[in-house]
Length: 150
Image (cartoon, helix red, strand yellow):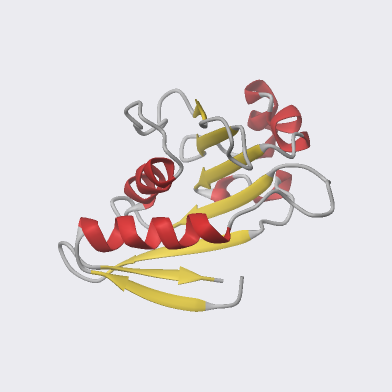
């Protein structure tokens, strides 16, 4: 994805942006594993809210919550989707890539049918493959956010 900046003033804007992103996502053509999207930004910048919106755009019906304390949550996607699972990882409490092995990260990343949204990639950068999409969230005001695609 080429560099782009999008401002979201409301939750509806955030949802619309998630729907737009969802339409661009497909399993990797090289067959070399999961599709990784990294989400960076300060606490409260919108990373989890955006993940919830992406899950909704894929048809996830269950409540999507932050995996800050459990580190990882896996959501089955509806039949007929290009991906079978959305894997949401929050690396905020991790201090290096070694901690990912307890989550089965290598196995998750081998499956081309997995879509992985990973918050706080800078905490485990030493263990991450290149991301297909890198997103940085910027707080502009109480409600407004800028989403930077790098």
